[in-house]
Amino acid sequence: MEQYVIKGGAPLVGDVEIGGAKNAALGILAASTMTDETVLIENVPDVRDTKVMMQAMESIGVIIDHIDRHTIKVNGRNIRSQIVDGDYIKRIRASYYLIGALLGKYKSAEVTLPGGCNIGTRPIDQHLKGFKALGAKDAGVVGGGMIVAHADHLKGAHIYLDMVTVGATINLMLASVMAEGQTIIENAAKEPHVVDVANFLNCMGANIKGAGTDVIRIKGVERLHGTEYTIIPDQIEAGTFMFAAAVTKGDVTVRNVIPKHLESISAKLIEIGCEIEESDDAVRVVATGRLDHTHVKTLPYPGFPTDMQPQITVALGLATGTSIVTESIFENRFKYVDELIRMGANIKVESSTAIIEGVDKYTGAGITAPDLRAGAALVIAALAADGYTTVDDIRYIERGYEDFDTKLRNLGAMIEKVDNDRDIQKFKLRVG
Ligand code: EPZ
Image (cartoon, rainbow, N blue to C red; front, side, top):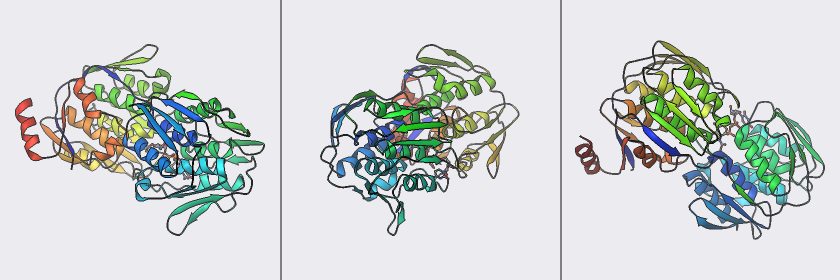
C-alpha cells in the first residue's frame, strides 16, 4: 500500500504549474462522446478519476487516442452499448455524466450508481427530476444499483433546481443539448467547470447561453460536431498549493491559472495575513509571520469552495485566536478533523461547524487520508508539522492531484511516495 512520508518544516518556495481542471475534464470527457466526429482535448489532467472515466468510455466502444500525457483524441462513432456497468465505475462520482451524454445522444442510458468521495449522502434527485422533465419518464434508480433513463423523444423543458448543484447542472446541459426546442435551467451552478463544459459543447455546435449565471438557456440543435478544446486550469489544485504556501510560511507562485477563479481563495489568504500578487495567468502567495484567525462559510461559486474547506481549516488550525469554519454544501466533510487533532490541532466540530483554537504547531503522526481534498489538506498539515508524518490511503489524493508529491518536492518539500518500511527508513536517513 503506497503512502507518503513527509518531514515537515521546510517553507515551500518556487513556481508550480497547475494542470487542467479535473471536474471540468470529467464533464467534457462525457460530452465528447456525443458526436460521431473526432474531438481533440488538451490539458486533460492525468489523474485517477479521468483515467477511470476514459476506461468507462472505452468499455462502451468510444475510441480514445492518447497523443501525449495531456492530449487525447476521442471518437464516439462506434458506441455499441448505452449500458455502463462494472465495479470500477462506482469509484467516481462523475460516471453519472455518461447518463446525460448517452440519454442526450441515444435517448437511452443505464449507468451504475456513482460512488466518489464519502463526504455526505449525495442524492441525485435533481438529475432525475430534470431527465424526467425532458421526457425520460422512467428516469430513476432500479434494483441492482443502476440509474436508468430512456425516452422516445427529448423535448426542452423549464427546470428549476431545488439547490445549486454542479452535477445536475452539467448533466442536464448534456441531456438537453440535442432535445427539441428550448430548455431553461434555473438556479444553475455557476462554477468555472460548468462554464467550461458549456463552452466545450458550444464549440461542438451546441447553443447554450447564460452558463456562469444562474439561468442557463439551451436551444436544442440537431447534431454536434468535432472540435479542438483546451480545458481550463484547476481552481482547487491551485488553491491547494496557495494554502500550502501559507501554512509553510513560504513563497509560491501558481502558474497557468485564471486568477479570477481564485478570488475567494485569494481574499481569505489576504484576510489571514498573506500577501497576494496577481498577474495575467499566475498568483504569488507570500506568507511570513503567524496566520491570523478568520471565519469562513463554504458556498457555491463565487463563494468559498467546499473543496477548499479542509485546506483552510488546516491553515486556521495554526492561526492566532479562534476561527470558525462552516460547511454548507456537504454534511460529512469534517471527518479528517480527527486526524488533525492527532497532529495536535485544537478543533471542535459541532454539526456543520468547526470551532478552531489555533495552536503553535502540529506534530507529525501516522494518519490516513479520508477523501481527496481532506487528504491533500493533511499533507499540507504534515509539511508544517514538527517531525515525520506518514499518510495512508493516498489513492484518494491521486484521484485529483497529478504528481502531487513531485510538485511539492520541486517547491522544497521533504516528501516521498513509498510502499515499504525500508524506504521510510531510507527517507529518514536522507533528510535527517
Ligand atoms: C461536484 O460534486 C464536484 N464533483 C465536487 O468535487 C464538489 O465538491 C461539488 O461539486 C461542489 O462544488 C465533480 O464535479 C465530479 P453538487 P457534485 O451536485 O456535482 C446536493 C472534489 O473533491 N444535491 O454540486 O456531486 C448535494 O448533496 C469533489 O473534486 C442534492 O441534494 O456536487 C450537495 O449537498 C468532491 N440532489 C449539494 O447539492 C442532487 O440531485 C451540491 O452537490 C444533487 C445534489
